Image (tube, rainbow, N blue to C red; front, side, top):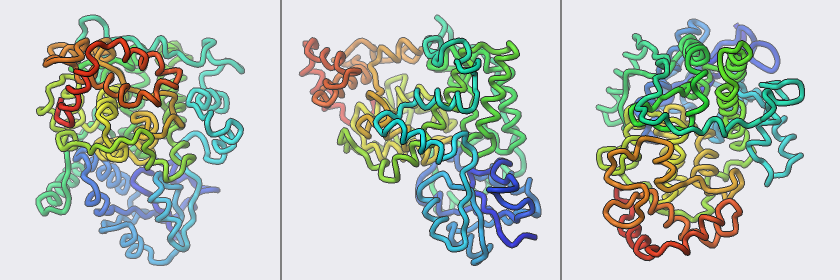
Amino acid sequence: MASTWHWLFGDQLGPHFLAPGEPGPARDAPVLMIEARSVFRRRRFHRAKAHLVLSAMRHRAAELGDRVRYVRAETYREGLERAVGDRPVTVRHPTSWAALRLVRGRPATTVLPAAGFLVPHEAFARWAAERGDRALRQEHFYRWVRREHDLLMAGDEPAGGRWNLDRENREPPPPGARALDAPAPYRPRENDIDEEVRHDLDKWERSGDVSFVGRDGPRRFPASRREALAALRRFTTRRLAGFGAHEDAMLAADPVMSHSLLSASLNLGLLDPAECVERAEEEWRAGRAPLNSVEGFVRQVAGWREYVWQLYWHFGERYRHHNGLRHRAPVPDWFRDLDADAVTARCLSTVLAQVRDTGWTHHIPRLMVLGGHALQRGWHPAEVTDWFHRGFVDGYDWVMVPNVVGMSQYADGGRMTTKPYTSGGAYINRMSDLCDGCAYRPKARVGEDACPYTAGYWAFLHRHRALLEGNPRTARPVAGLDRLPDLPELLEQERERGAAPP
């Protein structure tokens, strides 16, 4: 057996992380996996996320059989010492700055190029250097990726003649609909490994070793390559066709709608992005899915996911500490604890309950309901980032730092996006049924029935007027402050509301 071990992190679980040849581990290299308890002691994770990650790791170890040494240790360093001592180790480029420091700080460790993404770091660096740092916009990057990988292309032009089909993909829910009536998503069946993981998590909680938030079970997301491929197949063949038009819509009784639910599998490394977008394109070319649905999905995987991954490394480790709006308020306990029952606002209560129960919501509830409320209330962006990281089954450092610091909380001053993404209740009312039956009215700014998002939106614009009135994308709504006769009452109302559940 080869003397060099290959170390797999818990988000490097697909076959592409073990590809033989250069640059990669030898075909017969022994594999090391370390389950470090300290990861869960440092932070209070969602119970469903802890279950999914441990189940996926143990499923992968069972697949590898005698080739793997699976070590349960207090820390990664302890696990390395026990398993391999000072013997040489290879490892694929990790997915966080902390993990990269760990592997680079260990002697006799070779860091191999990253897997699980379409664009190598070196290629992105060349593209970024050509554009200049202030011009790193997702739309430009997405078009470049499409050309480089020949995705949805007709020669040198985009399929259908347009790069961006967002206009077709921003429809509100069908009038009166409580659900999209889409085919059900793939659901895995739990097995003995899941039972063992749940037993261990229960034991750790009883002993006081760790504490979790949220509810666990039954498992909703794939924990093995076989399950992930089944989920991909079900999405592309049965759900993709209905994905596009309503991908930005929200329905209280149908949180999944036609979304793929593949982000957790991609971020665990169980799926490779290339196979996901290629299968989606096959459905369009075969006439089984419309172009707007396929382009919307390709944009999510080959555009936004790749963009976020690259910016995490390109902006550097200090990017997470940006706080351009100087927001200092702590994330309140009711939000940290996912206490949806404490919240009166139906939109926020509904979405918070979705996170509590499943560890997942789609991108619009994350951005406009959860992130929008945090931004309007001035919560510290680092705390908000940590909350998203711990609370979502697909949340990892590389995912959440750019998504929250850059897009959701606009804490980087516009390096990543051109404006803050927040809105009043009118947007939520137009794009969802979440205002139906709510104690607040989306048009009301002041009074007992004043929508916390509508009032919060105007209070946010007022608080940052000096900054936002010079931005072409926000100057017009900022000018609207001068037309609000009840602005003083609104500001006093929002000061009194403070961090209380809305």
